[in-house]
Each structure stands twice: as structure tokens, then as C-alpha cells.
Image (cartoon, rainbow, N blue to C red; front, top):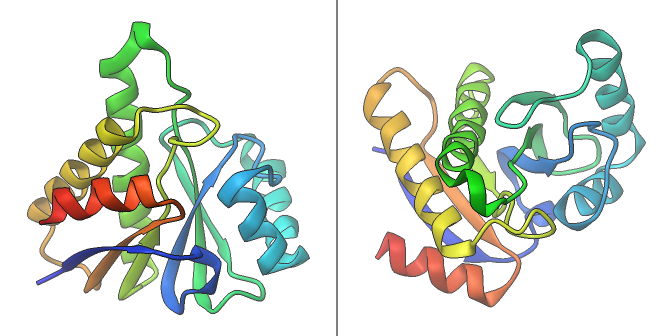
Length: 174
């Protein structure tokens, strides 16, 4: 049985099979968790991201790609692009955000990761409401787990940088 948990910490400091990066479409680093992962992981992550973009173009919202973890204590980094919040398209944004989590889990399973650490995708500069994003994330992960029995994932960690997100996830996970 897969364990879901929340912790308030720095995602770049975790020793896990897969760390998820809330990337931008260019995959070339940015602010927030994206910048922190690129900075802590070193230049090899950026090199691999550039190779992916050269091969397939930018990463569309909801999609995910994997690279090595560079200097981080993880096997892989999964880069996923979340939706930018827009009040006019909430159902579409929920679906896109859910795909971020499900496609990331699929890649983690493909790489036989036993643990996967997720940041709070789209809740920073992309302004997705935190409570809604957490609900979408937890439901998408539960749906994915219930539909697949043949995966290696034993632990899913929601890594919250701020106390507000930590409290939201803690209450959802009970």
C-alpha cells in the first residue's frame, strides 16, 4: 500500500527516488521550486532539459519529462508544467493540474522509483488557489493509484515550502 504524507521542508534536500519539479514550458529553470532544483542540482539538469527541448520542443502544461538528478540525492527529476490560474477556465485547469500529478507518477513508476516528492504545483507564481490545487492533487493521485496495481511507488510526499500549504495538505490527508 502506498503511503501519502505531507512535510514542510526543502524538496532539494530529500533522498528519494524521484523529485518533481514545477517547471515552466522551456524547462530552462526559473523562480521558486524550479530555480531551487536547478541551482541545487547543478548544470547537468539544465543540459538534459536543453536536450529534451531540442528533441521535442517545449513541455506542454500537464505533461512531464524526466532527467537525471544532477547533484541532488534522488534518482531522477520529473519536470512537469502546471496550469496558470485563470478564473474563466477552472475545469480545464483542474484537469491539466491532475495530469501533472498522474503523468509524473507514470514516469516515476517507469523508472521504478519507490518514493516520489511533489512540490505544490502551480500554487506560486502561477496563482492556482492552494486549497483547490491540493484537492486536485490528492484526488488525482488516489485515482491513479486505484487504477494501477503494478507500480513500484511506496511513498508519495507532498513537500510544502510554506506553512499554509502544509496545513492544507495535512488536513486533507488527515
